[in-house]
Image (cartoon, rainbow, N blue to C red; front, side):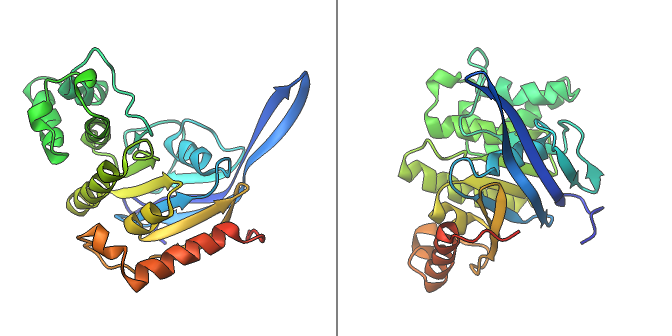
Length: 264
């Protein structure tokens, strides 16, 4: 793999150890153990596994919010040292600033990047339009539904034009219908923007419907990497659930999650 290509991500022999103090005793927790994976440009890769398996820790290290205890992390061929505008992060909850409108929330990251004047608002409105919220630009977060807040969060992350979009269970708190709608919209946005996406989820269906590849994690290690045989564009996600290819991929993920042997 040519790491110099824009949007490509590499984690090489990455481990992460936390030190905790519990009841006066120092304990060491191994969150990640020699994790290795590459993500191609414009690929969607989902990380799935039980709570505490290390998938969110891996995402935070990719974003630069955590530092690996060992190993090397690169995005676009450049080693990750802290946060940068080459990566955008969408949280499980949108974490919008409540005193700002939807447009102003999107503008916030652009201002931090140095954008000013008419270009600032025009760019924010363009990305709100991309997620179907241009008409809600002047609403504050309390005037938005949960799904609309997540759309603003996605617009905010995309507006800085990152090479890689990192998503930490962004649809996990939403109702099933809204979740499926946003899954379809995310695939449509990715098809138009060609962003590389690394998506953390607990949901087997979501992992299969969104991903080109699924990385199954357990106990801080990669259990298995599964290629999803569903072609793109994926169109009607509801119809895809009834296909043999979806059922086969879902079963492989389920089997990997329940296997006792961890592959290093």
